[in-house]
Image (cartoon, rainbow, N blue to C red):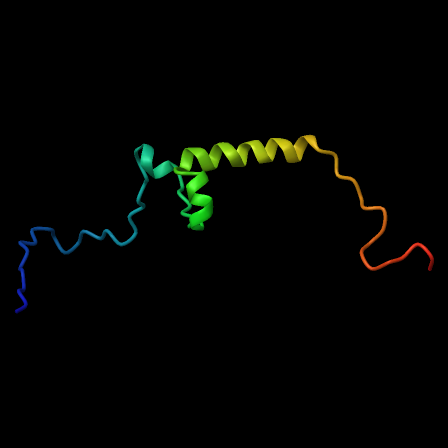
Length: 81
C-alpha cells in the first residue's frame, strides 16, 4: 500500500533555488572520513581507530627516520657476471 503526501507549497513560482550554493557548516562537515576494513587478525591487535592511527603515525615517523639504503645488487643478478 503506497501513500502519496501532498505538501502545501506556499513558495511563489518566481523563487528559483536551483542556483543556490550550499555552504557546509559545523564541525562534522569539515572532516573527511575514510572507512577501511581490517582483517580479523589485525583487528584483534588494533581494536579501534585510535589504535590504528597511533600505529600508522609511528610507522610514518619510522619511515622518515630510516635512511633508504639501495640494495647491493638487484635480485637475480650474480656477482660473477
